[in-house]
Image 1 (spheres, rainbow, N blue to C red):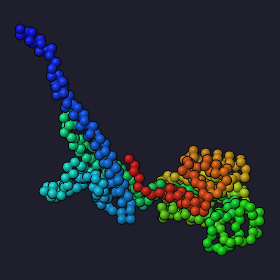
Image 2 (image 1 turned 30 degrees about the horizontal axis):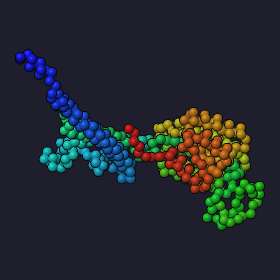
Image 3 (image 1 turned 135 degrees about the horizontal axis):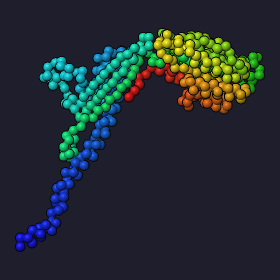
Image 4 (image 1 turned 45 degrees about the vertical axis):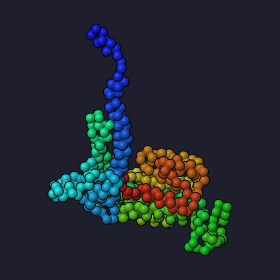
Length: 408
């Protein structure tokens, strides 16, 4: 009797679902809790990283601003930036963590979110060339995330998230440079642009159709800016950017070479921009177009060992090498395109950065300059005087850029 009852009990499946539910419920609840906490962690991690990046850049930028705060003030800028961004901070540099002040003072002045946030700001300063400084700002921000009750069923109450960011800034041009301008001064550069010259009431306005009458074309009104004068304005703007970056003339060396049907005598690379400016301002537009020899000369001069030696003695750096190549037309003979391309290939293979500007140029001229440019972002097309000035200004700004940049 007892045996039959025992066997009957074993065969009875009533209540299995309840038991399985009792076993599985905590796991299901924990899984739901984990999914919620994972979403929260991802969102918080992104917010934490964004705030940390912004704080590092803010401090790095401040160190090279006109105010130029000291290291301690820059650290405080990073802390305040994180607070306003919602990053929440308590720093090893703060009195509560350095032992300054009484425990009661520290506790009374500490916001509630300090219990789950930790900030460390480290700033290093190194020399930059002859007189400048390089600042590296590293910000590490940590936050404790408490899990919800369901996730805690797995035995873990919280997790610490960490975001770190490093930014650099410099008080002077970080990279020394040598730049050679290769400029077209062929006869078509004497033709008019579509920009009125407000300094003159009338002048000979040369175009392709009346160029055969040079230099006897009668003056007409209004007077338009010539392409050669637009080029002089544009180069002046480029050189102005370099001068702003290097007012003491210890990082930048420049020169120019012009060409028409043949290469003109090349300028000599020298500190600053004075020599290059004088060379360009003296250009007169005449003759045909042949760019190969001028580009070759610019390359050989900018890549010469003497350039590295000059910079090493003056600023202790290896300079970045640039060629700025400009034309408004096309070479008279296709062979000169071939020669120019060969020297462009050689320059790029030897890490010379090539900017090119096609100014109201025909298709073949544009194609040559596109080929020679280091990349598509180094190539500019200009159809108006303002476009040409903007192109040369952009080249100058890029070459002399002094900006804070995120490095990690």
